[in-house]
Amino acid sequence: MLIPDDFHALIIGSTGSLGCAFADQLRQDRRCKSLTELSRSSHPGFDLRDPEAFDAVVQTLAAPAALSLIIDASGTLVIDGHRPEKALRELEARRLQQAMDINAIGPMLLIKALFPLLLQRGKVLYVKLSARVGSIQDNQTGGWYGYRASKAALNMMLQCLALEWQRTNPQAQVLALQPGTVRSRLSRDFVQPSMHALSPEESVRRCLAAIDQRTPKPGAQFIDYQGMAIPW
Ligand SMILES: NC(=O)c1ccc[n+]([C@@H]2O[C@H](COP(=O)([O-])OP(=O)(O)OC[C@H]3O[C@@H](n4cnc5c(N)ncnc54)[C@H](OP(=O)(O)O)[C@@H]3O)[C@@H](O)[C@H]2O)c1
Image (tube, rainbow, N blue to C red):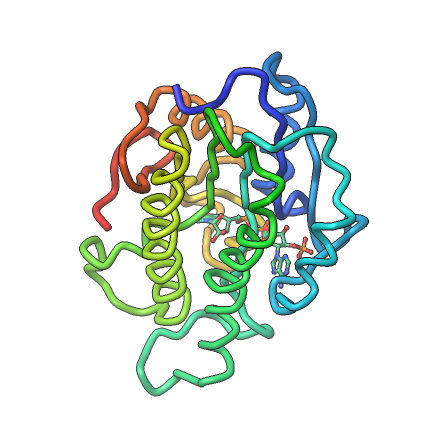
């Protein structure tokens, strides 16, 4: 049971397919005491490529109490209209940097800025949407250099965060979450109608059930929507 009782939640990236489904389903959870949404179009809003603005955004965030459940469902796959790289010859510094900024560096600097708003003692859970393709061990096909690398970098920083945080709050938990292959804005150019894929609602229903069934562990956990551990 990783989800705290009587939680105050923050959903980051709540305009996304999965972020919106997380917000909808958590709002109906009897344990949810408040739910705050943060996105590029919320007020205040934020852009992951502009970390210098994060402190100001956090200062105007109206959360009624210390946050004990934070779900960050932001992320990107297509950068500036370019599909993910399939081959070395397609690599471009600017696009690789943007994948890092949006999928790894931005989210970590945002949770850094948010840290004073989090519950300091007791059960608190930070879930960041990652991706199975960020697993180095699981990579059997190659390709998608920037997206894979940014999720692998994210995973490493989530592990660092969990280990550091648990020194001051042993009940803090960090999850890197793989939602499955989901029909969404991010995946629409890659998931054909004939392919098996989850709806955002089904993915989130299964993710929340999987999270609830996990037990706390030292360090971060990298799991999928079925609650199965993924090798880092
Ligand atoms: N869909 C899948 O099959 C799948 C599989 C594995 C992992 N994931 C991961 O799940 C997460 C959510 O994906 P999704 O399918 O729900 O994608 P989505 O519908 O495209 O949602 C992405 C979210 O990220 C936000 N975002 C993108 N760039 C941003 C930026 N520069 N600054 C601030 N916010 C930004 C979007 O905001 P706007 O609404 O303003 O654009 C939106 O809220 C991602 O981390 C993705 O890597 C998805």
